[in-house]
Length: 240
Ligand code: ADP
Image (cartoon, rainbow, N blue to C red; front, side, top):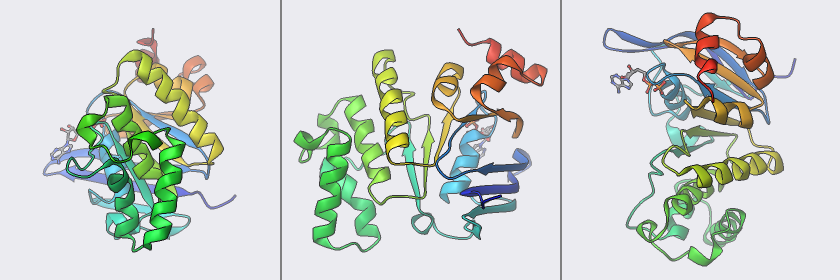
């Protein structure tokens, strides 16, 4: 078996006495699109934040291509992160927002210009490069966040409910765009959502979360047709 791109091994996380991730193991292969699906409060975001380096596990390990990363600061982990609320820098232009991760990594000026240009083109925002985030629509802001997460060619893209703030039509368009980018750039994506339909249409595999652990993991077909526990059946059954 090839080394997984990312491996969570017996990872736990507690906040005080509250254990929100419980001895959880998960391997994600290179180029896979894996959704973490489950009700609010089931620990999905916390797992993602531990991969990104914004939270520390209280137990277990996280490896990228076989090397432990859980002690590294976020900018040394090769993780591109996209949040629901975009988290763009409001005082910076679109181009400067996208350039930021490259500056953090000490990339030279001309290469930054080149890469930002390509990233803008990829998300169809070349005409908006000098605008400030507040001058963009929600969908456009999320495209900037996506470009900023992809511009340094991260090993893994972590997305936390990235489409949650968008209206239905825009959301469906962005689902297609993200899927297309995933295929074209052969991205490894970990995608947090509580939306069953979104996980079913976008994922190679779905990990169904409940109370800090994975109830079932499998292809969308498996999860939909062959739920293995009552929790999964009930949660997927809410899809309409
Ligand atoms: P999900 O992403 O599935 O909605 P989260 O990972 O955000 O779930 O949260 C899991 C649980 O951990 C929730 O009960 C939440 O209140 C709690 N939690 C998350 N972050 C913190 C924190 N920084 N301090 C205390 N409790 C937290």
